Image (cartoon, rainbow, N blue to C red; front, top):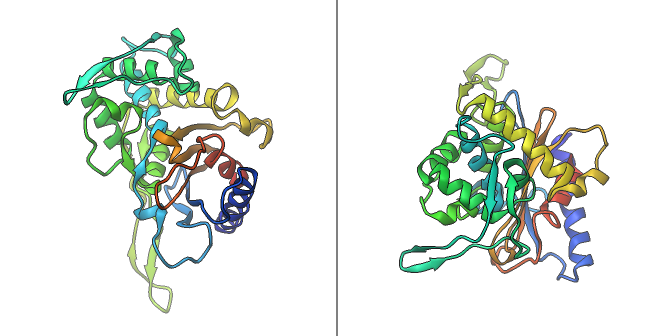
Length: 302
């Protein structure tokens, strides 16, 4: 049922987005992964907008910059140091510049505004780039990188300041693993699609038991989840409020990459974690943010 829901939602919403934005029909592609929180089981996986496509599987093999989907890992790393940071710690959303490899790196907020002193949770809810960079540099690139690995990232992450704003390339399945660990309160269960292999008489030949390990501080995971709920109730994912039941508790994060090339949304509710990516195979701009693209598909699926 979950797989059928995903396969039905992807082409329908993509066609609507292409029509409303006057894009060429079929110009957008997508990938989606849905897993269970408690068991770490892959409940649905789609590597293209059309079900049954036998070619490149974008959910498994496509690695794209994840944009602001990286931010929960940064805030979780900070909240793992309760003597230094809490949800209400003031963070400076102020201009930041530094030389990286001989070039000046000067990030900006998406709206090019500066917000001054903001509470830590508000910086995540509003996806403020400048506040996140200040926080990430205070925590340290080494700790942020370690947190990404602990959550489930498997590829080598370059420890450069730009990683704080999503210059990290992961597959949708790896993103699902990261968010599954947060949803499970800091306990990582390696995602699996097979429970056991049996012979023709139903006798088990091989089993793949659930393997749960403590990955990150559960208190920090809880607080990060609380802040991620504010993303939905008052931040960049407010659109979901009109799409899903009012009493549905949702935690998530939008992701948009440079040049509006990749649109992401990752989040969880109840026992379901879902990750959706929308983009183009030629890597040209889609002109979609995380909230105007992938978020809409995520809402349809959930």
